[in-house]
Structure formats: C-alpha cells, structure tokens
Amino acid sequence: MNEDEMVVTPWEVRGKIDYDRLIKEFGTERITPDLKQRMYKITKEKHVMLERDYFFSHRDLNWILDEYDKKNKFVLYTGRGPSGHTHIGHLPTWIFTKWMQDRFDTRLYFQMTNDEKFVFESHLNLEDVRKFTYENTLDLLALGFEPENTFIIQDIEHIDLMYEIAVQVAKKVTFSSAKAVFGFDNSMNIGGIWFPAMQAVPAFIHSWVYGKKTPCVIPCAIDQDPYWRVTRDVAERIGYYKPASIQNQFIPGLKEGGKMSASDPMSTIFTTDTIKLAKKKVMNAFTGGRATVEEQRRLGANPDICSVFKYYEFMFMPDDKDLADIGRKCRGGEILCGECKQILAPMMTEFLEKHQATREEVKDRVDEFSAARLRDELKR
Image 1 (cartoon, one colour):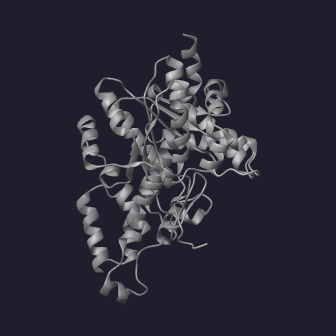
Image 2 (cartoon, helix red, strand yellow):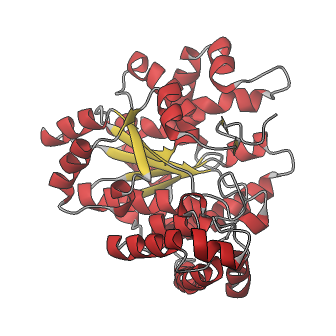
Image 3 (cartoon, helix red, strand yellow):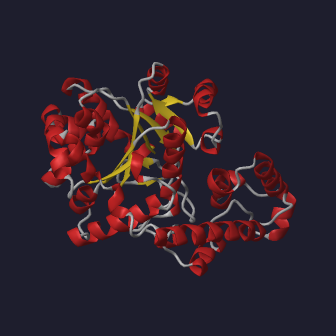
C-alpha cells in the first residue's frame, strides 16, 4: 500500500489527509465565512480555530443557530476513548468545546468510552481503562470546565443511565448497516458491534432525562463522523432530533505524516510528559526544512508540511501578524528549523507546566462532575 494513501476511520488515521475529499466522502459541509459570522454575532468574539479552519466542516450548524435564535438552546457532546494518557492533539477539540459552552451558555455531556477501549483494545483490561478514565478526566477539568454545566459520563459505571436509550438505538441499526459503515467482519467481538449504540446515547440523554427534545452539537475530529451518521439515521425514528456536529482537522504528529498518536510516543507530547522530555520531542520534530543550511537560506522551507508551524497555527500563536511573520521568514530562508523549534519549545513547556499544576489542583474535584447526578434528575 502507498504510504501516502489516505486512511481515515474511527480507529486509524494515516497517509496524506485531503480534507476536501473527506467532506465529499463523509457528506459534511464546509464551514463558510458567512456561517462563521453568524456564530460570531452570537458569541461576540472570534475564535482562532474557526478563523484558521482547524474546525472546517459541519452538519446542520445553520439549523442549530436557527433554533438558538428561537430561544431553543442546544447541549454539547464530545468525549474521549481512555486508552492511554491525554496528548496535546486531544486538547484543541476540548478547548473549542469550552469556548462554545461559555459563549452559548450551555451544558456539556462528556463521554468517557471506557467500554469501547476495553472491547477494541486487546492489551487493555478493566483496571487500565478505569485508570485512564481518571487520568483523562484530570486533563479535561484542567481546562477550566465547571460542574454546574459539565457532566462526565463513564460508560461502564453509568450504564443504568444509558441502557434504555442504547437499546432503542441498537434495535434500529442492522448488522449489515454497521458492517457497511464501520467495516466490521466476522472477527469483531460482539462488544464492538454493540458499541455504536452506546456512542449515540449522549446525543439524546438530555432530552431523555428532562422529557423535552433538545438539539445537540458534537465537536469532534472528522474520523469519528461514522458514529454520528448512524446516530443521525436513527434519531428521528426513536423520537429525538438529529445531532448536529462540527468537525476539526487532526493535530499532526511530530514525525512526518499522520496525526499525533499515542501508539508512537516520540510523535506525541503527552500532558504528563516531563518538561525535559517534551522539549526533546519538540527539538526532534519533523519540519519542512531543506537538506542543508545553505539550501534553506537560498530556497527557504515549507511551513505547510511542518509540524512545528502547525502548533503555532492552532494553539500557540493566536496573533495573525506573528504567525504571518514567522511563515514569511520560514519561506524566505531567514529562519532555520532549529531556531523555529527554539521558539516553540518554551511555549510548549510553559503550557505543560501550567496544565500539570492545574491537574494537581483538580484531583479532589472529579466526583463533582459525575453524570451520576442525573439519577437525581430522573427521580423528580
């Protein structure tokens, strides 16, 4: 297989990613300037991840804004499959979700799919996925979420809150449909085949608990879109709105090609990495530089394929003038890759130091965010 061939599934992302092709193949819509301006009219501020097309496609966002204009508020739903420690590539989606939560004054249901990781990952046991659920929760809370409007659903622990909706979803999804969407074959265990019904649940749980159909928006990486296609297909047949979604690009790994992945530790900066190790990873990162200093001074480098520049673009350099300046210097050969890494490294380590300190501060607050609180709502 050609190493540049694009593969994008909920379990694997590799090759050269063509986002226009993904929009066409998945059937999403490009986020237009007009749609951004419509959002900004409500949020009263722009967001760098929208402005720079990190969030680039959507389903039904115009309908969501129509409903919002009618005073019909939506809820947010995103999540994490806790198969390892959180890495930097996971955080932008959560950061943007926090911005939407604050700007639209709404509730977030955050799903920790510990059941998924247990049934799909042969090397993980139940103790592993529970440990990573806790560790990943600390990273979420360190971003500033508050318990008043944030409910963390742990699939295994909160199955009593999920099962009634899940069986309704499962009844409407045939095995042939699941095979067509997810590529399941006879080697897949029945837990994996069942799981899409569980991943649909948070899109409907607010409506179920409170007895009123409520719109839902799912911020997510585009590789997770197959789950929402199934969810949308069954939604109206079980009495709920189709969830809308807004899809983001992948944060690239520090090596050439592909997204940041926990399966290759040196391509990934984990939130739990030591400052020394994080700096080492940045200094070893793949760039768009030339083979020699002389050649780069003469011909310039290519920031479009540089992982260092991507971190500036999506997280660490929000000022457009600063970003344009470093891009110009890169293309013109005025700055070498080592110098560019020396700029990113302290930005990355400063972020990690603050994030890790906040992780420590929230360790005694995890239970405050538990979706178990919804059980009390059901009794009312």
